[in-house]
Amino acid sequence: METILEARGLTKRYGATLALNSVDLTLPKGKIVGLLGPNGSGKTTLLKIAAGLLTPTSGFILADNRPIGEETKSVISFLPEQTYLPDWMTVTDCLEYFTDFYEDFDSKRAEDMLGRLAVPANKKMRTLSKGTREKMQLVLVMSRRAKLYLLDEPIGGVDPATRDYILNTIIGNYDNEATILISTHLIADVEKVLDEFLFLKDGVITMHDTTDNVRETQGKSLDELFREVFRC
Amino acid sequence: MAWQFSSNRPIYQQIMDEIELRILNGTYEKGMRLPSVRDLAMTAAVNPNTMQRALSDLENQGLITTQRNAGRTVTTDETAIKRARTVKADSLAETFLLQMKALGMTKEEALERLAGREEKEEEHGNNT
Image (cartoon, rainbow over all chains, first blue to last red; front, side, top):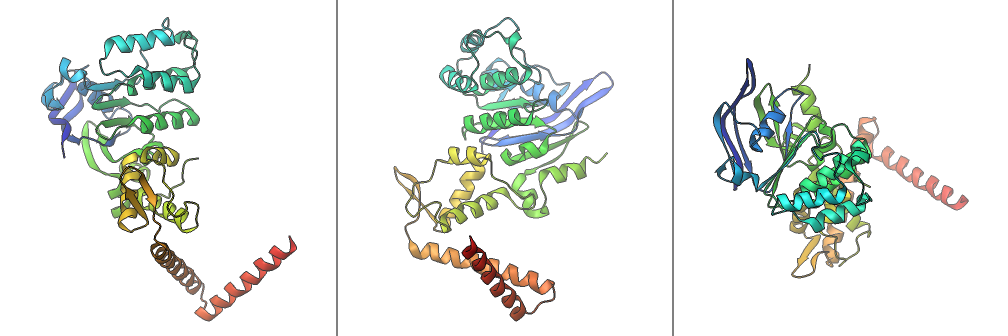
């Protein structure tokens, strides 16, 4: 199977804190993968390194067989935990911004999805609810025809109905050539959409398997396994 | 409405059960064209890859066929559907008998309960 993301000995240190400790990782193309771990386990650090927003202290990481940099940014679509759309931009501004910025941005797809959300085009970001802003940001990120999507806590902090909308947007826009890496600690909500998962604990990947395999061999859901492994 | 899944079995197997049931009880009629993988995945709220796997396995079992150009359709092969229904019914009957046995009942007693139950259902049906 072809690889979309590969890391070897990936380490990130913030002063005395070891956020990632020699992570080895190979993600295939065409899968939806969960990056699962408790708060502070290093999920965001790993995603930000892959997105090219942080540089690792040591080790290497390749996306689409190239070192992380300008080139890989054009094939990676990153959804940060906090939205970054400026308050003063309208919905139309945001669409134009993404069209200008990303060659692979499918504005028709984005408009269709925003139409379903029933957000008026002239509304400013400032006036939208937190949930709507998050949906809007996700629609923009998922409307790129990227090879790798990195979604940092896309369902954290939103109500269950919004969560369903977000997961549906992810499923509905997924093309089976692309890989989606979703970080979350809300396992029960995402496990139905995951092909594979990674458990990240104190900066170390402790498990990498398929969701089916866990159910098949252990007869339990990912949520149950997570609660066991990460019991406090 | 998203489909409900239990936590102890792989999701693709549970999807297979659900679609098989729909074929056996006629919700998905013989020869009917199935929705696309993506649409089915969205309705069930599952990963499209998982849906794909379930459909391929059902295809291997002969309940679904892939038409060039027409996508996936429910088989028109009556025998295949009958066979699948018998297999399913046998497995349900076996589960029933095992549970009755666990209650301390013989097969005869179990069947007696079953027969009595059917009459009750009919009575109920007549009254309404």
